[in-house]
Each structure stands twice: as structure tokens, then as C-alpha cells.
Image 1 (cartoon, helix red, strand yellow):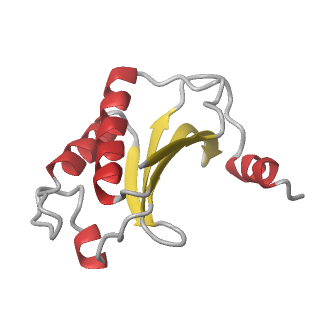
Image 2 (cartoon, one colour):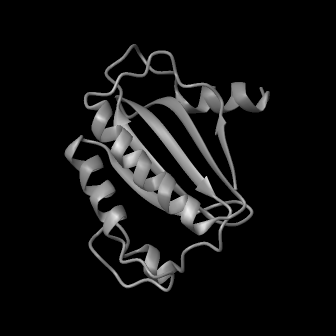
Length: 141
């Protein structure tokens, strides 16, 4: 399996509980690695939206994806999965993110797979607005 960090960690990122953030990311990366024998990526970026500065982490795999009916239940509590797990890790990760005043969600990866999005409050310097950061990364105007 190939693991890649995309981009640099934002220089102004500062999270209240980096140990808890690391535990959440460990769970998300472990789930992605179990789902994908091909590749897993991690990207961190600073965002500012609706008056909140956040550090955004995207963990994406190239696995088979999560059925929509199961995706709606993951993170809300233990579930039975076709891949042998019970979703306890995701439940703990989502609960820890909420405890840190953050948020987490799952969405379809492109062209396949699953991405887990984790947002945590950024206590560092003012964040770059997300639309500006995306423009800079893509080279578009």
C-alpha cells in the first residue's frame, strides 16, 4: 500500500489537544488502510468559514467505498459492517472530534473510495479562506 501526505502542514495550525487529534487521525488512517490496499492520502489545510478558523484533515482511500445506508450510521454508534468491523473506531473518532468542538464526516472519494473529513478549531494565526487556498493549490485564478 502507498501512503502519501498531500501538501504541507499549515504553519499556523494550532490545536488545543494534539494528542486527541493524533488519536482521531490514527483511527481514520487505520480504517482507510484496512479499506484500501492501493493507497491512502492525508491532507491538512487551514480554513476560515462563518467566522471560525479550523484545521481541516482529509483522509482518503481508494477502497470499495461505503454503502450509503451504512455511511449514514457510521460515527453515530456501533454498527454491523460487511467488512467485519463494528464501526466502534469511527464512533470514538467522531465523539472525540465533537468533544474538541470539531466535526467529522464521511463522503465518497473520487474516482472511488471514501474520504473522512475532520475539522478542529485552529487556535493559531488567522486561517486562509478555503476558496483562496483551493485556488492557490490548483493554480486557477
